[in-house]
Image (tube, rainbow, N blue to C red):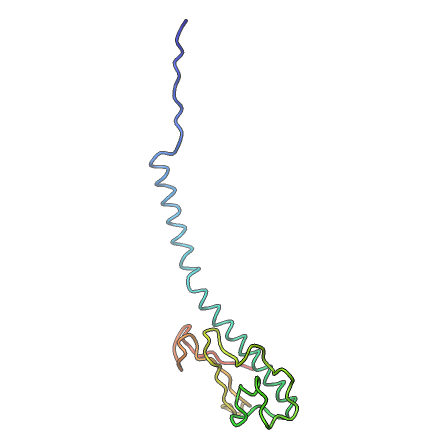
Length: 145
């Protein structure tokens, strides 16, 4: 009988194939990661703007019920959570859920009455740094009626 010669099959990847895959993954990561990074802070800015709009709606409801926006003597925005003595028709349970309104960074929302330039009130957040002014995500976020 004649002996059969078996040729061993190669399995697995060569070093070149593995390196090509690593390079492709590196290029993809370099393209995708910068676009994804920083979106969390942008989302917080957007969420704070939405929160300001909601608080402005609560202030409008307060005015409808009580004939005026809450003054600083009424406690400012605290009047949306705790009934001031001057509020005749204060909504049972308050005007905002979850306590005193805060922005996405857990900083107090700023309320000024009367507002500048003839506005009834100004409502804003100091942004990510919690300080007046700033740029990018640290910039102040204003409610625009």
